[in-house]
Length: 236
Ligand SMILES: Nc1ncnc2c1ncn2[C@@H]1O[C@H](COP(=O)(O)OP(=O)(O)O)[C@@H](O)[C@H]1O
Ligand SMILES: [Mg+2]
Image (cartoon, rainbow, N blue to C red; front, side):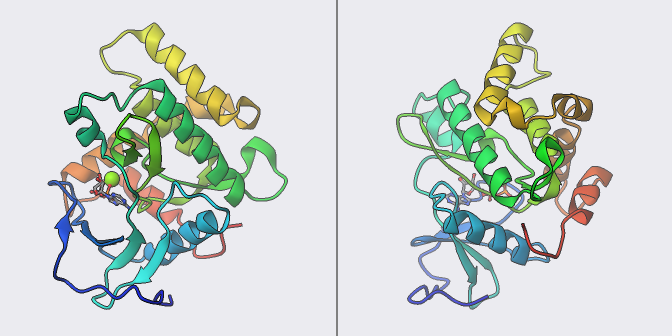
């Protein structure tokens, strides 16, 4: 991957962004540096497709830094926990509806041509408020962390999104969760949704990914399955 002009990165002046999560992530100026792996070319290609389509809500790809780490652009805004610290609500409907429109755009840009709701698309793979970026007044400003992106069905991503964003299964008001889920699907665009297939997944991937995150170095079968579905070929 070519190195963008003027984007030289040194190890000094880095700010740790990881906050105890699994991936050591650092900011250096306009760039975010993260460990590279076999998935990196796929992620960089996806980010290039999004950037080429004018999706300013996703990081731009920055190739590989001289020290071997993956580089993506920093998306300005607040993490979910920073928004909470300022009294904001990461689960407010407005930002979540915006995210669903962006997810739809990503899926459409990467969809296998002409096969409707059953088309293979590139899934984000880890849709949840922990991977959203917010403006100080609580609007959505970006979607980050494409490390688990993979080819799959729209339903794969939507099942995780509904589980995480509508907080399905948590001990809250079920009618409120269902209302949120319906609104989220509406923002995605119901005509593109194979609802039965979303429901049949029962968001199995999301808890699996959560477990994987809590056990650095260990892999659970669901995560392995997601990884093996990652294609090496073009996105569309
Ligand atoms: N491109 C980015 N732009 C802005 N902030 C980022 C970016 N990538 C990561 N971060 C920050 O770093 C944190 C951890 O990064 P993330 O890629 O989500 O790692 P993990 O794999 O541990 O979930 C995020 O919650 C966010 O605050
Ligand atoms: Mg993350």
